[in-house]
Image (cartoon, rainbow, N blue to C red; front, side):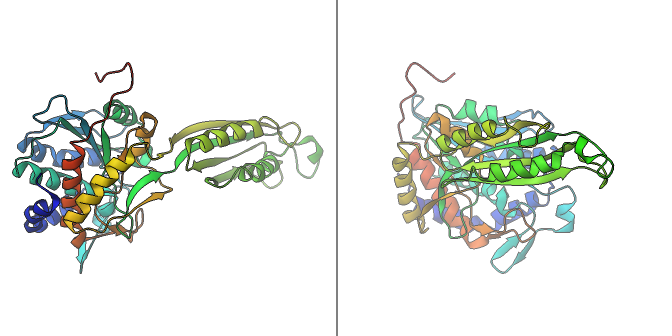
Length: 396
């Protein structure tokens, strides 16, 4: 085994190159929509992966997203396990943000749009693979890397691709940033997001209010009921309130966005069913309600054999000189989509930083080389793992 200590020794002298790569891709605006910038970010890594033997493909995006990049490495054990690594190239920031807030270095921190979420993870991944192959790493089955371009909008284009590639993976490693204290992520809440619409009856609020049926009143009553669905391990958030246009007219239309999050899939499914039941019965007679679910992610609960992956990470972290800990978080990622397949998923493998989705976003530069070495060490160890396929199924 090569070991993360030796891999760190190979990666550390390249820190300047890593920062330069980060500067170049942070300088590319890459909102989810339009997707041209995210396609450019993905394309930035094509030749790098080809140069170390990767089979590179560009998958056309749909729904207006950018093109996704897949890279496949085949080791000397054709029947060995498949390891799946995922990162995303899009950010929450609009076009023009890179010029408004360019990449800068302040002491040990680098700043710029998408610098930690998650362009730094894309950079550390390629350096981890380069270091492994430079040391002669070939004792593995298959390693597949996906750089998608639509994670920040719920993966409208790449979800099916993630599920197709990941269903028979022995393990999945997600390149999202570490928590602020350096912790990896071993569990994530699932979510369901949708629009609640209320139809009422318009009437003059002064002349004949009794003829009206206020959609706004019904919305207010339903919002109180919906917030009542919250429970330990499950939360409700309501945003985007709207209703009525003129003060002298009883509102005949109202609505809002409802988001449910839950630690366990069972809790999420129960809350969704209870929401559907609530809106079956309006409280204001004569109003009508509907709910259209538009997105969400399954809960990323730890797989039964996650301990094997955590042990590989613990040993790689020790060798790389990185403090090891893992935690659960409420946010979603690409890794959530693999939970239904019971794939062991370890997330938060990128560098350390903070201020995600804000103008205060930063990455800790000293975390780059150690975290890249740790990632490389986890890849080496996880590539030796074995996970039987689901009964009666085989990978296409």
